[in-house]
Length: 220
Image (cartoon, rainbow, N blue to C red; front, side):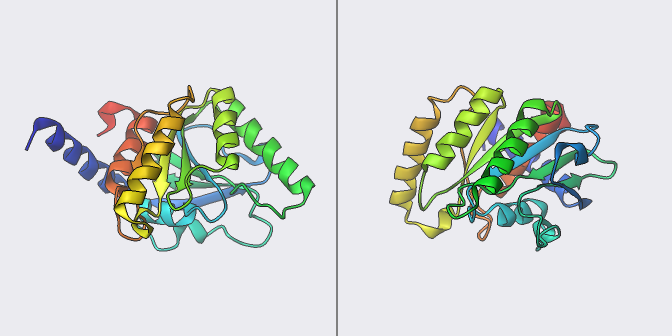
């Protein structure tokens, strides 16, 4: 085994230990004034509705329903915060799903205002994860989100979800297409993550990437 592989495995084990500790739902913020104090780095998750954000958050934290703790009527368009570590190390931010075709115009406008303001003004936001359903590839709403992140100068990682749901040849095609297009976006991180929350594929590597993004190389 090469040194690089050993180092990656060591980092993944260290990241898993952190996520296996305290992970708690903190609060939902419908407006910026409800955001928690910016005391630790934050990693935000965004993606189309039904892309698998809740499943990915549950898989990363090793919980069955941590991402559903805040899902009650009226909270679907809020920023949901989860705290990781004891003592507190970082927060995960579950952003409202986008691409809701039948949502009222006022709901969409409110979502855009909240998200744009958070992205542009949150100094502790270390990285954004843009989730893409591997069965569908990039949609126009994903491109709009990527453009928004580019304009906000917020670095982001592309995470393909549900990779166990399609054939390997199709996954390779979609991954290549997404990678090629993401290279045109200045804020997109060059490394793309292929994940399956159900099968656990890519979860350990993504945990390590999140910790490094939030806390730096020396954290693991």
